[in-house]
Image (cartoon, rainbow, N blue to C red; front, side, top):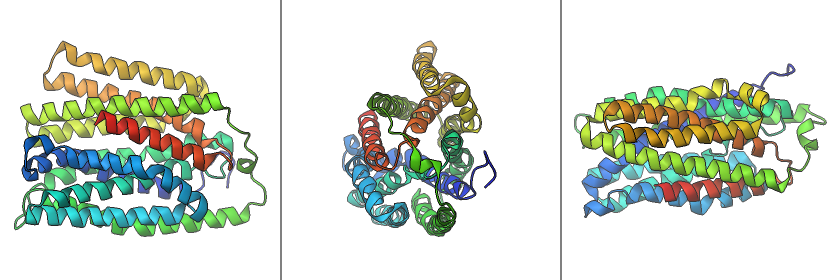
Length: 351
């Protein structure tokens, strides 16, 4: 590997992250609509989406523990099985108009996302510390692909002849799982090959991260997700009530782009500003995004707020992830599991 150049296996995780975010964006686009269609009462419409985050909250630390015992690859493959089942349950839910099957679909999707949230940490395993911000940001940038593809899929497969509305969107989950599984297998083979070639690596000699830095990273990532979820759900409901499904999909596309595009340069900002300053700027942008709707409820104000929200989230999340990606082997699985569980808790509260 050339100095300051990312190993090729990182790019497989970039693709995997793109698949993860395609599934997540499709979910946030249709979950409330389908929930409203199948729920016995209107108040239960968001329960499936809430169960998605509950699954993440309940299992994230367990998956982190299993990664330490069994390796990341096996847990990632289990996530693919859950993603496939999410598609099957969603398809059956709409075909039979059974609300409990929709709940099972989103719970299964939450299990997949719980495993996929570790892709960015897997990218930094055994890397030189100087490459960690670049690897973390590179994987997060998979959202650029998702932001372009997911809304197009949502619009094109919203109605398919011979199927109830939105059924084909759930089938996309199963297709993504079938494509993702071999990609993760190849990633694992490439990673093991590089690992076998390394006799001693700097990643094995990482110093123990101080507890105060761990606390800053965990709280920053959790609050960034909380603010984004609250803003995202409120904006999504407002757009779907006052605008067309197509307009709402484009707005979500702009938001996800804003979440992802900064990943192409945020690693340089982290190296220049430091992780803490990058996180601070991220939170300033998050607060700014929450104030913009005060000036107007029209679509343009909501879209501007969503774009600033996405950039602020990226800065705060990338900074926090970079701190935690630098953990040594003794710390990483326990602390990363605790971090993802805390994020899932705050994301659930935000939902």
